[in-house]
Amino acid sequence: ADVRTAKIASLEVTRDNSVADGAMANTLRVKVTDAFGNALNGQTVSVMADNGATVAPTVITEPDGTVEISVTSQTAGVSAVTATINSSSQSQNVTFIADVSTAKIADLVVIKDGSEADGS
Image 1: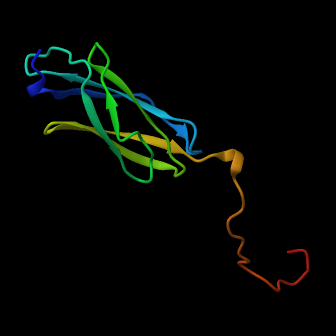
Image 2 (image 1 turned 90 degrees about the vertical axis):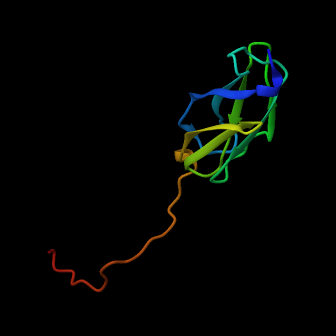
């Protein structure tokens, strides 16, 4: 195995549509190989996520060349997760859903007022 040619071979979403509560995580699995497809152990992969999602800034590959990435968020919506090693990177989108257990009325607007109480 040639660590100088380390690249992101794959980035796959393994869990999606978690609740945006800052605790439930979406997960991805990244695989790092050399130019010949050999799995690379102990490689540091940089990780970023957008839309307010939280990830560990780096993860280290296991003997099979893979490592799990956990992503949490308090913002419902889509977050792009990017894994990078050397000049090689891949991105995947994960989705966080609204936490219905914390739903509340955000706004209440009167559309029509002063209607006559005539039964119509």
